[in-house]
Image (tube, rainbow, N blue to C red; front, side, top):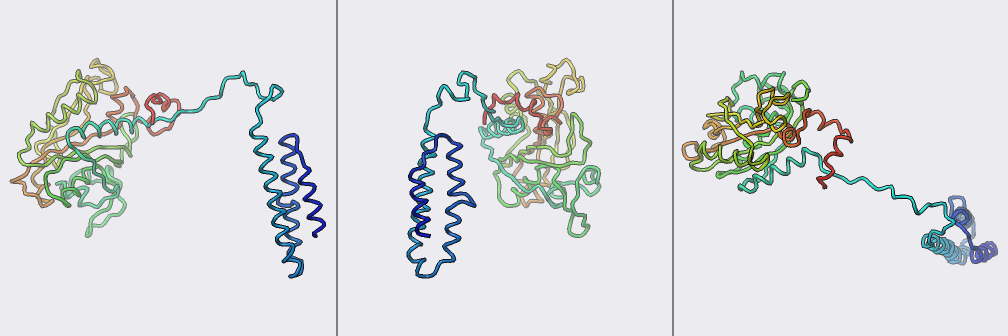
Length: 344
């Protein structure tokens, strides 16, 4: 075995591959899974104890020699410049590479957060699987409210005694958790995914993104609500955007309103997005109902506040003039490439 090792050692020292193909042949011959080094180690197992003491060191030195020879040759070939005889045509243009970009929903999500941060709002998050208390009861939803119906809510577990478990239908449940675990003042927005059993169309999805907001402190009035949301719209859509408030109803606010803005797609002339009215509703809002404050053990006689909630898809539609919100979840590269100017 010693003679074989000496013979292979001389062969390795004299090897001089002329190209990468010959270098690969050298690697396979000596270092491959069925190569000479592997075979010698297999034979080494059959040697006597006395021979192993001598051959062990020699065999390891031979292995290191083969590996070092291969690595040295490989680095030499890697550093060699491309010659004019190469098959590569250096005059051809490069292939280029794809530049990543944020999803339009993430772009708008980030922009909304930055706007409200200027007003002192923090970001709060909560679970997407909620119990009946946080999703409905604490927010003043009566037992017969339509939102509790199976047609609107994805229930995971129906339990009349302990309370139902469902996918949250709004991020207002995070408001309840915040009020339960702290004391006013509160000033926060709650972004996240919500789920409702709705038919998918150009204007609706069963899984979409919402952003709720909450501000509770002493002496908060409806004027604070209107001014906050007016500032938000002007910052997001531009100073020329018109705003109007319409009376509405939500179980957890009183009084309640829906806020519309002038349609950014048709500029008020009428289109499918605004239902040819020139106005698009972007959020619901109102003063927090005293019952909600009391449910969270907050003194409704001392504190007041407002809450609002908006769909990110609807706002993104208006901001980027996208007429079909289904495009956000189809992952069509032709659609997403339009936002590559908005780099990560």
